[in-house]
Image: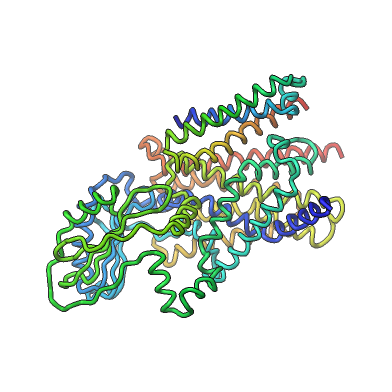
Length: 91
Length: 510
């Protein structure tokens, strides 16, 4: 459950990044269509909510919610790292 | 109007951050290591047996009482702290006002599995590092609390102004651009700050709460009055200490612990964490027990028993809502409830916070190098940056090295471990002051890398608790320490290597 929670956080943050024009262009080299943006945003949000549920499942709500924030931070950091490495190679 | 506001906030953020940045870096780094304080303790006490068999708590308590009967007869008070969880692995007994040979007041620790007195080397351990993050070192405690408190307050100011200044929190959420020096440092500072913002706010706010009764003393005095006696009343109420009882002078055998422990554990739905015996051996003896599990709030069941009959006299009220809030805030800060995974999350977010401060400090110099790069102030800031960001981690690892290299039997070795760390830090500061700045960065990062990579080797040469033993034995606390230090060494080495390569490349071009 913990590992899947972490994966969900990385995944969710990744989707959210892809919903943003700048990062979408970085990855796919073209502007995102409007419905694609919305789809990515929805996917991202729901992954993060699933991640919260996974945390609550693993630790119970009080501690799980603390863990969730930690997971969000680490997940987002992974995405930042990946994007940075990618843009570093391209540039 | 709006821009002027943002500009003034930017000014405040820059200078507030700069003034306390170095100390905050120290507080964050030592505090982050504090999340693994007992694990570090364990590593710094290699004499400890590899595995300790778990012993039921009633047996441990019985053993403790036997030891106390011998060591401290006629004491006013015995205190027993059985081992529990990751926080404490020893059985600790102490006593007040005894008439035995072991002295009036005293404390002894035992291995719970064998009942032998602990015999590991004297060391400040991870607790010392942990304590440094609010108590500093070499300073009187209250002065240190004030300094740390003021820095924390300024940190809070820096967080709030930082959020105001940073215009595009969501737009730049994932942005980290290479290339432009200033751009990259700004991005790094932003990303590290924003992604871990909940942690930063929580840790700073709760950090202030710890010593709220010190910083906000006038509020307390307004309700309870000034003076030592009123202070005691306040703290008794706040922390729920057991009231003291008088001797009646008649001797009476202490009640058996088995039934009391079973009752307390049943009522608390958890383990016994702390036992006080007041006036043991007297007919008026009392047994005060704190028991409980580890939840997000540090709520424990507190029970008072008659020490002779074993009958329950009082079960203390659950704390007030305000106290519960206070407890939760502090618990969030300390993360004592965290299991292994969550502890690592805390550790990582703490490191990110440290890195955020470091990036902010570097950003200050990068931004101004072209304009005021040759002034005294600029040089001072840059040199202090080097000695803090690169020098402090190296100095902390020197502290671990000292633990292995200072002879185990030396007088005052625990103090010298800490001295060694600060001497190393002072040397690195000196080094940063005399070398050209760019060189000093590279050299200090190399030094940090070398010490990190050296530490497991020294550990293997001086003890039999090295990776060759701990990995096969599956002792992940000890092995994890060495592996983590190795990982840091590799990161430092990679950074230094990259910087060196860039420097050679630049020189070749010039």
